[in-house]
Length: 438
Image (tube, rainbow, N blue to C red; front, side):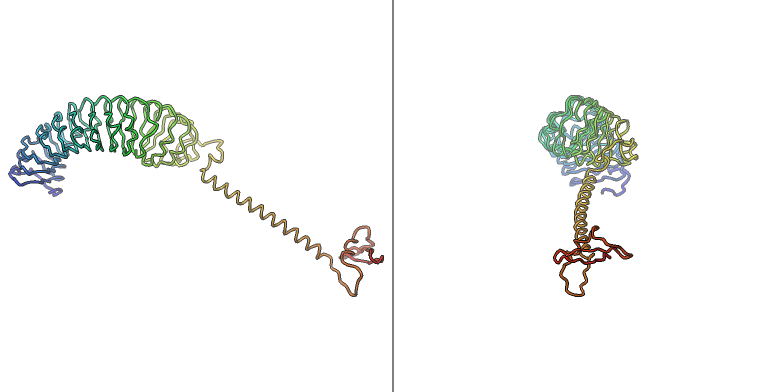
């Protein structure tokens, strides 16, 4: 009876339903206490009471030993998590998050052999985390954030190599991250920010092949950052730790090298914060391949021109307090680049395209010039042959070439309104011919 707008209390006699196997009263407006006999039916396997307004404590008497899933999250329950839950050997999922539970987590729950999902975040649970979580069952999802837990995270939490998600942020945890996380290939999501954890990050964790989210900010972690990170990473925050040298939220550390271009090869990276460090040099052109929703490179010592793909008004706050940076687009809040070479001023692809057009145009111009030159020579020859016209009225004993060769200044004998008159000697006969050049 989920989402049926139910109000009021859960009936007290619900535990008398001896054949009850599945109870779903989730996402209603039920209030009051959970009936004390709720966990009495021996065949009961699933209980969904999440997203209601229930209060009071969890019933202590548990006879439903076949329970697979108990989900009473997002209510206002107080008190403790029952020791009796540690007897539920078939229990796969336990969700009690977003309540006001305030006692330590029972040791027996960590020893349950079938346990896969544990979600206890958003309570007031104190004390240490029971040490056996993940050792005796194939734990996939372990979430205990926003409590008052102390001590260390569990060394054997990924012993069975199936852990996909672990959150423990907002507690008072100390010590190092479990070494087993460095060999946990199934891990997709880890969130341990806002604790007092320290030491080095397990080497293999950075490159876990399925890791998409790594939130370890606001701790005391130390050591050198890796040369390589997982290509699947989409959200990273390592800010406010004590990492050094190498290098996506990594702000507030003391990093002082160049930004690695390899960050631009993470196709799923959408959040990159490297602000408030001492990064220097150019921004790698590879960062232009990213499509981040958040980019913050402010308060470093970066210089040079920013990648053209980042010259977007959406990033107008991304480069603040880097006096050496410049851009061609004023919308990003940087000064204009001066003394740019053509390759710096335009995208590489555009430069290549323009160069190709220029080469083709040059070749066409050469071919056209050759064509014009040859055409000009041919027309000149035709003009010479057409300039002199011989008109014969009777049989002659000389040729056109005999006449043309004699048309020079030495043979001029007069001139008129229409041209000069030549006395041309004929070599063959020794006689002369008068020719007028019109």
